[in-house]
Image (cartoon, rainbow, N blue to C red; front, side, top):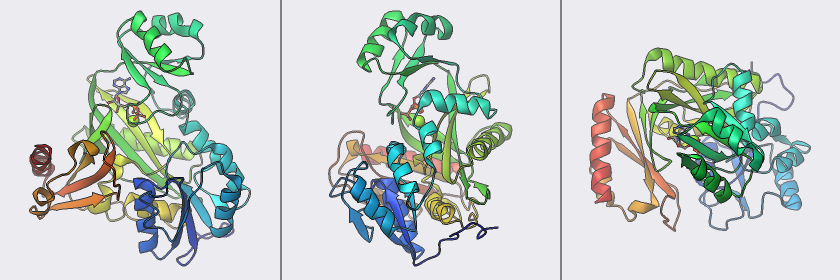
Length: 380
Ligand code: ADP
Ligand code: MG
């Protein structure tokens, strides 16, 4: 039951804050304002996409104590756009106002070694890996994991950055030098049959709701498409949802938790990583579910009951990166079943996420066919 905890639920008319003003912060702001909340965003970038939507944009760095103080004073509850907000800043705010997810959840999700250990303890199966803490660990890591393998920096990686596929020991050593000899994990390279993600929402009263599992296709380490319903065995989809729920409960999590999994050729579901926030693979929910992941983020931080996560239509989400700028918009708008979402970014760089579109259709195969056809035309 929402409302038992002190100060919760936080109702429309109150002020919500978000640390981070990129596309995830922007879509959060849209959802919050739609529901009648005021929104304060903090982001050092003067032209960030969320700043254009928020009531107030505090242009400051995430470690600026006086700015954090100001934000805490203005907001009834605060959330995060991405996991690399320094956890000390989250603790600083937590001493002044409510902030979800908690610093403890964030610290686990920020660190690949910690999150894999946490997942293992919660009953999930991470990809076999070795935690590399120093150069002298390289030989043991290679002996334990074998090749091919993937070397990933423990912290600050995203969209395939800070990671290298290595096929032998000399490549491993070179990759370790390239990442700057920071703490890493060496993972066994899995032959991936399919990647899926499960997004779960949980509030401070431990009420939970999960979105349908999405099937994710990547290009160059960046999400390209999400397909829902995922074309995977029901048993595996169920396992993914169960895994995400186990993690959320083990973390006493409040907010949106996205969990990425690999399905190997042998049909084994491996935990890959988790994100303590809405996820790119959940953008399909904006048009295809009763409640979007951003509305759900608002509901969770405010201590409201989770919204219905039912899928209303098969859907394919396609990411639009800076590589294909300027797109021919008419290719999208002449289709009556495509919903376009742009993030308000003026500068298009290669690999930069500029927007996405959702294709809704009677069945997933025709949504996929339209998505592929339109994407092809856009890239011509
Ligand atoms: P990021 O934080 O950049 O999203 P991920 O660990 O999710 O990092 O890796 C990005 C992508 O690289 C994955 O979605 C997957 O396609 C591929 N990948 C990562 N780790 C492995 C692995 N151990 N075996 C095979 N492919 C992998
Ligand atoms: Mg990933």
